[in-house]
Length: 358
Length: 138
Image (tube, rainbow over all chains, first blue to last red; front, side):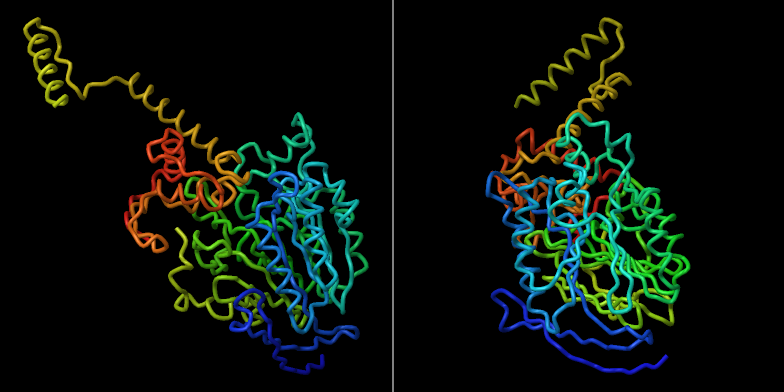
C-alpha cells in the first residue's frame, strides 16, 4: 500500500455574530489507502432537528434556529463537503407541514443530501410522505472507494403498529422517548435480506459505512437507544475489515467499538439528551469508551447541540464534533488500540469537571 | 396559637381516655391501612405530575418537559437548593421548573404552591428516588 501524507489546513468560518472573531481550525491529515479509486474526502452530518409545528406557519423557533445554524455553518465549510448526511428526525410529529418546512430550510444547503429516516418522520404515515417527497427509506451508494449503506433502523413489530386507534396516537406514542408503552426498533428480516444481497457484491477490504438513525447496538432499552435485532446487522458486517456505523437519535456524543465495527453518534441541532447513566431506576449499557460531552447549561439554547463533519482516513472515520457552546472535539480511530478515541480527553487524567454526569 | 390549642385539646382527650381505661391515642399512631392510603395519595400526585411533565399544554409552544428530560433525568432534584450561576443566586427546584416553563416551553410561570407545581416536583423527585441528598452540588 502506498501512503502519501498531505497536511491541509482549512478554516470553518462560523456564521452569526461571532463570525469575524471566531474561527475553528480544521486540520485534515490525509492518507491515501491504496484502492485504485480511493480518494480522501469529507462529508458533513446534521441530525435530529425535530422541527415542531405549533399552528399554521408557526414553528418552535428554538429548533428552527438550531437547524438554520447548522446549515449556515456547513455552507461555510472549506473545502466543501462532498455531501451532507441528515441523520433523521427532521420533523417532531411526522406532519407534512413539518417535513415540508424541513425541506425548505435544508434546500439552502450547497451540497447534496443523503437522507436517513427517523421515527419522528415515520410513524404518522409509516414513511409514505418521506418516501414520496424526501428519499428512499433504505439505499446504498459508493463514494470514492467507500461503500455506504443507509438503513431504515426505526421499524418495529407489527402488533405494536396495529394497536393504536389513529395514526396520530401511534405517532405520539413513538415520539415519547420514555414511553413505557413504547416498542423497540428493528431493522427487520426483510431488510436484513436486502442488506445481505447489497453487501454480497462488496469485497471484504472495501471500507463500509452504515448510516442509521438508531444505534445498531444496545445502549438503553427504556429510551430506545436500542435496535432489537442489532446483532443480526452486526453479523452481516462481520467479514469486512473496516466498518463504521454513524447514527443519530441519541442527541449526544457517543462512540463505541464492538468487534470490527466502530460506532459514532451525533448531537441534535435541537436539544441534548442526558446520558442514560443519569436515570438511576434502570440499568444501562452506555459504552465505557465514550468520554461524555459537557453537561449542558439549560440557560443556553444551543448548548449540548451542534453538528459534525467527517473525513475518511485509511478507510476509517475521523469524527469532528462541532459543539456550539463548547470546545469542538475530534474522535478518531486509534489503530494501535483498535477503537475510536478522543484526541484530547480519552485519557481519564485529561478530563474536565463538566464531563461528569450524575 | 392554634397549635398550642390543639396540643391542649389532645392532652385533655388523652387524660379523658386514660380515665375511661381505653388505650391512649398517640399523635404518631397509624395503621398499615393509613400508610397504604398516604402512599396512594402520593402516587396519585406523582401520576398527575407525570401527565403534566409529558404534556404539550403546560407551556405555550407544544414543547414538553420530557423532551429534554426523559424520566425526569438530568433535573437533579437532590442537589437543590443550590447556587444557580445563571441566576446569580441560590435557587430551588421549583424556581428552575418555572424557568423551564417560561423559556424552552414559552409559557407562564406557576405559583410556587400551585398543585401543578407540587405534582411536577413529586414526579421529578420520585423518578430520582434512592439518590442521596447533595444540596448545593453542581
